[in-house]
Image (cartoon, rainbow, N blue to C red; front, side, top):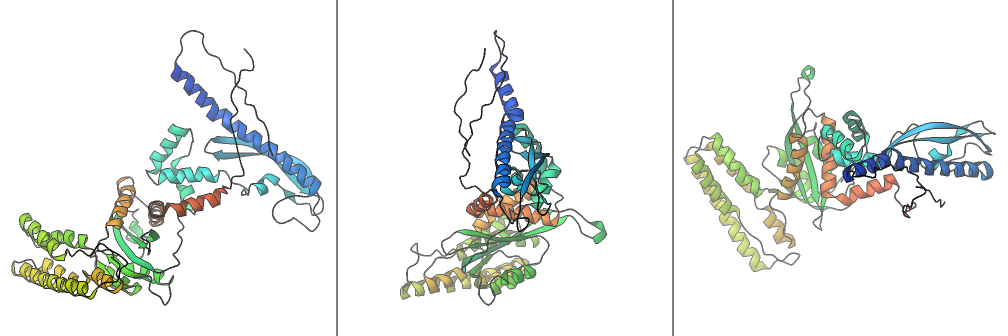
Length: 444
């Protein structure tokens, strides 16, 4: 259906000097409050009449017919209101009645796939989700009202996000190269009756596929690593989820998730970073802590050849294996040195982590592929999660924090997945074209 629509405005401007800013603000105000919503209302009501005529003359309505031999007649119009990103649209949709089964139908609702009491468009929901994922609900509400004259209270925005399915994650169909896991704290809503304080724990799992693309797998706030492992295991029964697991030194994490992968690789960055904390527990002075961190970093730094996906020569294997053996011996000496100097917690930490520091080298010698030896990608992701969950808000519910984290990791790790979701929900298929043909003076 092609229709020419003319918008008529009355312009009253002082002939003497006036402010350009005032003119711009007035034009914007009338377009946002009356112009664009009025045009949208007119288009909807024109289409509504067309759909009603087709239904009464030809019996054309999408979806299941109301009965075996429907015959429709036009009834009254019902007032409706729909919130959109271009303003609130007040319109009336036509109601039909089937003469055969006496049921009432609304053509516009069927053609546009609207819910019976839908009060907003999906594109407005997308806009709210995008804004809320980057700042607090209160600031998002103020931002939408100030920039676009879109009145969405923070409680309404919270309800829309909570009910949205935009955080759904697609599960990969192939075995992943690496599984990266980490956790961070956040301030949750305390529950004194159930003896729950405000210290929540967010746990995140992402995968790296064979092409090096990050794939978000999930976020959890009220489950242990063992429960998370069971949930992940259910997606790949009888098979390994990934070739390698990359993790930090959180107690029990590697042991609970090790069965999902063939090898476990301790993050080298965390290994050096956390040694400072362990030595601090042992009351070591700062100069000593920094020196031992430097020593540890030099021991575990074994760089692999730059060429990937190439068969590893036997000579290269022997050279790298000798360096690994030398590094393991140096780690054993470092643990003994720390123990002799009165740092037992640091010594235990180094000794316990030694067996999982060089799994990336074993993987390289077997496959010729250079695997990850740090979780730096995940650390950058965790910083973004911490910025939204810690610095901008507090008092999260368990489900709210997990949902917001899934929205963020989906947007950061795999934006194409989010684009596909919204295109399907908004039904973007190139079926609508609106063009501006100019403005002209009707009268002076």
